[in-house]
Amino acid sequence: MMCAAMAGQRGRRVVLLEHTNSPGEKIRISGGGRCNFTNLHTQPENFLSSNPHFCRSALAGYTPQDFMDLMRRHGIAFHEKHRGQLFCNHSAAQIIDMLRAECELGRVVWRLGCSVVAVHSENGAYTLDTSQGPVTAGALVVATGGLSIPKIGASDLGYRLARQFGLRVIEPRPGLVPLVFDAGAWQTFARLAGISTPVSLSSQGDLGKVAFYEDLLFTHRGLSGPAALQISSYWRPGQALSINLAPGIEWAATINGKGIQRGTVLTLLAERLPRRLAEHCIRSVMSGADMTRAVADLPDQMLRALATGVSEWQATPTGTEGFRKAEVTVGGVDTNALSSRSMEAREVRRLYFIGEVVDVTGWLGGYNFQWAWASAAACARAI
Image 1 (spheres, rainbow, N blue to C red):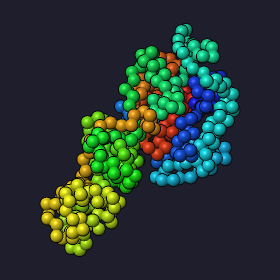
Image 2: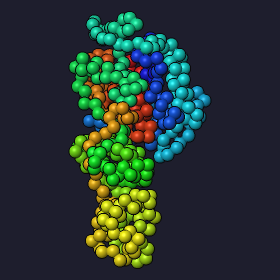
Image 3: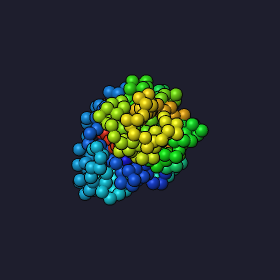
């Protein structure tokens, strides 16, 4: 919608094909129905890609301020919620309405409920066989998104088209998705379901060490919340996670009783962690020992083990909740095959790929929407 509107307003004749009857469903359901439409602090460093520099040009060419200006022109009120995350005051549907209005200004022709069956290229033009008849155009923009949330219409069409025209596709996988663990091994942790606490969560992966300081949510199947979602985009099967349950505290010094001669170990931990989580940490180390014992009375070896358990908990997920629960898709059309300035395929004239179908994935917090707007703008200016 963004690309179609901007290209249409530049005088291009545009037809927008949408295989569902409700365009913008991912916008509609995002942010609890209020759409976290961008982030004030957007930088290339907030994105994951096989080519981390690819997104720089598009992001510089269309900034969060540009989209905010568009929102203001349409009278849509918004607010900052947390760490630069911007949300609509009222409803995400306002953004969909805004984009449709922008398309109208560009005289964009809509074909809703229109499935693309095949695409052919001949004599410098593209012909699309669709469920509503053939469409021929001099340029083709693929803005099909990824595989996440199939119930709202996610499709692999974009990847199939890329491969058809000889472009490499980085294997798609779920991103910003809850992590799951072996049911038997997780049984004791399942009792903590519903507990949320700020943590430092890190993983040593292909791109080096990645760490996020966010809230972690325990579930019946594993870990969720912003911290788990963030790390999931980087996590690979078999990799362990390192979790500091109370970051910012020198546990090795604190829990070993230096300067603390009074109070029980439970009191000490419960001041810094949710009580149920504190009790779990103590039981996992003290094996039935009375958690109401004074810190000063506990053996140093036990205190050191408890400090390690709290600040260096190692956990290895067995997988994720998959595309069904993933907010985004990691991977996609290889950026080495595209121009970073225009999003055009380097070896296929007037074929463009934008948004989530490309191997550029943002962090949680509005970054992926900003990539959608920015890549759309870069493409629309070049068509």
